[in-house]
Image 1: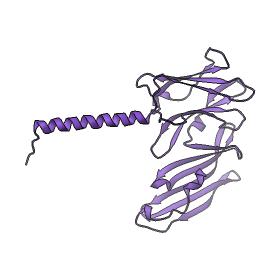
Image 2 (image 1 turned 90 degrees about the vertical axis):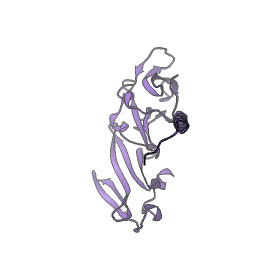
Image 3 (image 1 turned 90 degrees about the horizontal axis):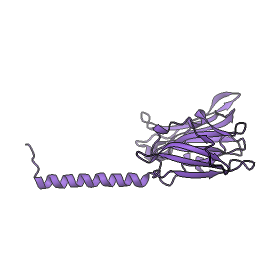
Image 4 (image 1 turned 135 degrees about the horizontal axis):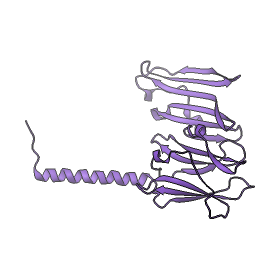
Length: 243
């Protein structure tokens, strides 16, 4: 039997659809940062250097991504450098309230470098572009290798970088790596991976670390079997990465 809707029902359905669309749009706007007016950041890269100013020039359409970043040195009003190498055209709208542009010493050489977030996800994963300060030239140089690393935490005490990617399962499925930096490039020294094996109905956690320039296995653990991942304790605890 073919169903026919009345004009009143059709108008109601249309009104509901428009309302939902507007609500989704408002929620999306609330979640992302408005860059239509640009943004300005001032960072002290090193005690011996003048302050650097970074002016983010927005892409006017749609106004929530970056067109370019101009760098000013000290009190000069002339552009000292434009940050190059990052594919601004491919970046996502930035999440509201995030630390999306910041200065950190990613290569542990005593000079702060700059990071721009270009992608992020609901699971907490994110990544972006990194420019390393080069004391010889006094300029910021794009690092393709460091920019390819996802969410990262710096450990100045060990001069290593920890990365973590949430694979789901309330964070129980993940991929974690630790790198040291050699010649401004990340070198993997430790890796831990945990995932849910749907065939065996078990969590599987493995780890390896670099010894004598080779990665060797240091852990291979399985959880007890269960009908669902939420009903079993994973052998490795991802909470240790956030302590």
